[in-house]
Length: 355
Ligand SMILES: *Cc1c(COP(=O)(O)O)cnc(C)c1O
Image 1 (cartoon, rainbow, N blue to C red):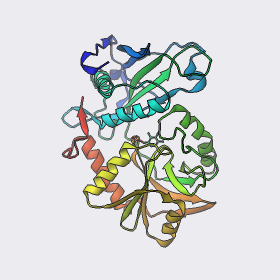
Image 2 (image 1 turned 120 degrees about the horizontal axis):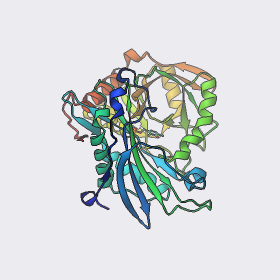
Image 3 (image 1 turned 45 degrees about the vertical axis):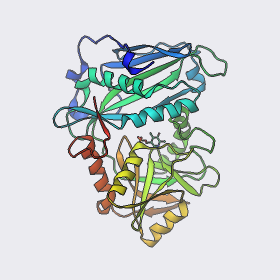
Image 4 (image 1 turned 180 degrees about the horizontal axis):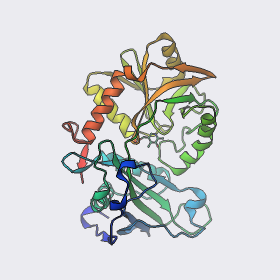
């Protein structure tokens, strides 16, 4: 299938739910736009692309995704500019990462142009659902599931590629206290950590819950072998500033390659900051806190853009980090990214795609 010949069957919902929405009190992920996109895979090809009313799926209890988790997703946002246009942030990067996940999960790829065309068509139809207020956005959730009604363990022969969207409010997060995890692991070398595979998130829930019971909002994941190197912060990549240098764990097969993190690095380099993408020792971060040279620590991801870390727990000890107000780089880069996304400054990296 190629985008030019894609013939999406469209069935519009009679009257839009957007008029009844409480736009001033948007939360995350519980209210869905009118329509969804569904495309089916069988006999080695994608067929029946369709946009219709958002509705429940009907699945056999034997459906393989429900048992063996052959499933993965993407997460991205569409933003409304002050002139009323709607635009996506680097959607081709999501499309490429979608296929990286697909390959690892033994699932069919969706051609990048088909992925983009599907996204644009769906958002176009539900344009009214893209919030008009600054800081708010339309969250977009593309995903794929294995749909063979078969309980044997093998790659499914049939799949569904689905996209739905939800209007979301401005994501304000209190600076978060994090615990460096040294018992459980999110990902291992040779595993699925670099894919947005559903099972990765299920496996992370229990360790995160234990940390939350102790008062830590997130985990800092470390390498599964020695728990010596920092990998990610919850479901975000992580960046530190030590002295005049930004330091961030290099993307590998245990780290999900965040598009936000890469964009932060691109902007930092453009501004002339020194950036090191490499293995980051837990010990060097703790030593830098002690020496007073660590000035910034934050997570990077689509949901929050930048999520400040206020405290790090390591081996039973709590280390307070410098006040968030003093963090020149992360505050500045957050604003810069938002200005690009909402079309308030020139898109000098050519990141935005108009719907
Ligand atoms: C999605 C995700 C991220 C963030 O990626 P973005 O492209 O910046 O949204 C980071 N880590 C994990 C584990 C993720 O699933």
